[in-house]
Image (cartoon, rainbow, N blue to C red):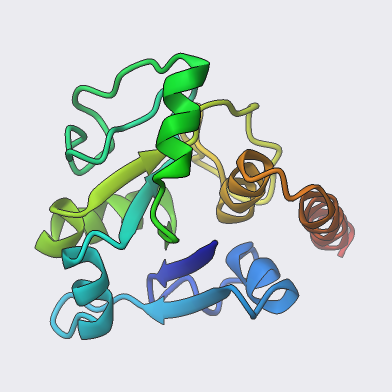
Length: 180
C-alpha cells in the first residue's frame, strides 16, 4: 500500500496536522505532495489517469465503486457492499490511495478546483467508528482526520502492528497538544 497525502499548503504548518504522524512513522510508503490549483503535480495526474490510484472518501459502511459514481463531496450513488463484494473490491484496490490532507472546507475546495481529482477513481472506508480527533473545531459528522483514515486503511489490510503503532502515536499526539 502506498499513500499520497495531497496536502493543502495551509495544512503543512498547522500544529494539529495528523498527516505528519504517518509521514514520520512510515516514510517508506507514505509521502506528501503539496496541492496547487495552478500547478498540479504531473506525476500524480498520470497516476490517476492510469487508474493506479484512487482518492479516499471516508464514508461509514459504504464503498464507492471505482466507476466514479461519487461526486466531488463523495456523495452520489455509493452502494452498500456485502462482505464478499467488499473483499473482491479490496483485492482490486489500487496500490496507491490519495488522501486530501486539509480541513474539510479546504478539501472540498481542492476537489472543486481540481478536475483530475473529480475524475479520479474513488474509494471509501467500509466500516469506521466516530472520530476521536478533538483538536479542531467544526468537524463534520462522520468525518475522520487524516491519521484516522490511514489507520482505517491499515485495518482493512490487516496490518495490525502498524495499526497499533499509529494508534499509539495518535493518542500521544493528542495528549501532548491538549496538555500543552
